[in-house]
Length: 126
Image 1 (cartoon, rainbow, N blue to C red):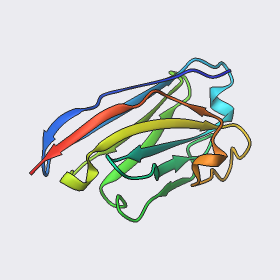
Image 2 (image 1 turned 180 degrees about the horizontal axis):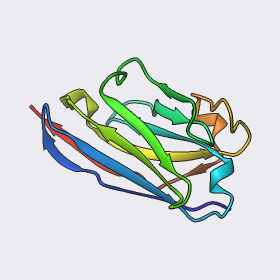
Image 3 (image 1 turned 90 degrees about the vertical axis):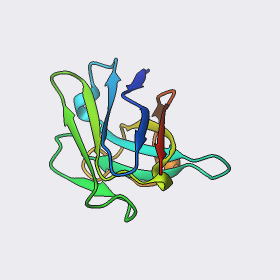
Image 4 (image 1 turned 90 degrees about the horizontal axis):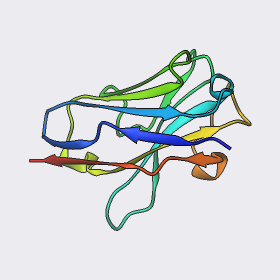
């Protein structure tokens, strides 16, 4: 079992930045691909970004490409999501998730992730 705990959410004005963190409890964290998803009010949860087990491959949704950066620290068992140039449309609850089955090429579908954090709220005002 993997426990994931997100932090770093908050309120920011459009154009601002936030960095989300996700700390994992599992000693095998470094062998998992990891992802970030988000869910806005009244909408389905959507893929944001993913990173392979070693950090060598990253993937982004088109809506965040060039503004968000996913990274990981396998010593600290933590992944990050640096979010720049935030827009009101980025307002959502952000979740991190672990994919132990596809460490080299993480999936973009939420069904591909076995473990989920509780989420952290990001609110961007115009």
